[in-house]
Image (tube, rainbow, N blue to C red):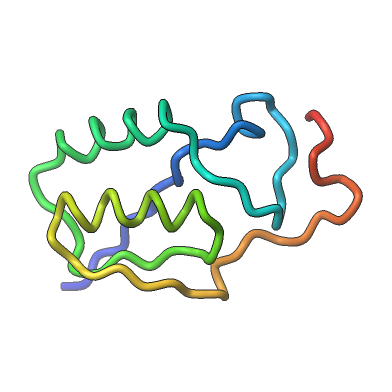
Length: 92
């Protein structure tokens, strides 16, 4: 049986500042990556492959999960966030 896991990528500085990110590519913060590592360490089993959008935070998050579960990691451009144009960077 195939199962699908949805995992939110580690947060960025804009997430912490409650800014709209859209397609803007930002790295995950060290605090968010540390929190993600703790979360996946608590899981007993994991996926065979992690698919992630092309942005830096999602790629870093997928590598954390892939390292924990010794699984593959693949970028899928169809998973990218929508371009929000002039709204990107504005506070919510």
